[in-house]
Length: 114
Length: 115
Image (cartoon, rainbow over all chains, first blue to last red; front, side, top):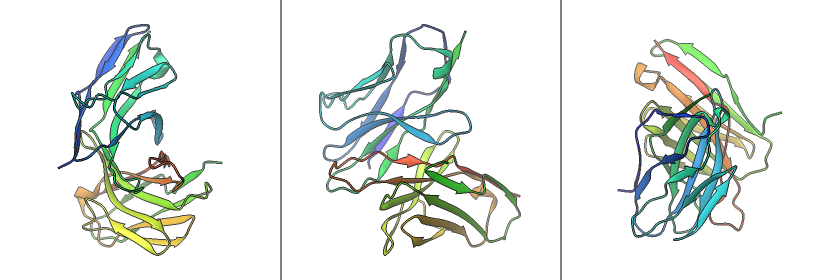
């Protein structure tokens, strides 16, 4: 079935380090891909998205490129800050139609230390 | 005020009790969703609704029911709570729109503990 797999956490980095969180997916058809972020005590917020192969989503210094050949959508940031500490979820949305249903990965906790 | 409001934020109850979690939104979105979050499992879809008369089961609907009282209100019920329903529950909304992949907007969650 359709699924999303993320690297296990927690990921612990020092401030200004480079971040990569791996995400791979299995899906029939051509999904759209998303990264959501969950700060402590809050709900999920959309961080970025990409809707077709080779698209790059970007927001707040984070980037992810939709790689159809490797079925991946890895999240990257060049220089993390303490305020980036959160749980990050990769998700996919399946065509056809406009259903809006999301399938989430298990989440990756990021801890950034000063 | 939050666009998607969940009540209560926290609830502790006993096995066998009936529980209702409520969600209201001011975004004017047609679509509403209920998820549960468990450690290491991400979010899993319980029920979703595309409008007041259109309600659908998600991947883990057993033991749950929902009611869409109005466009802005979508409640989740546990008719007879059991301990493995202890989780963090999220309500979300999305617009139908012209973009086939509208983002979802989440409430802050309800932490439910069943003893």
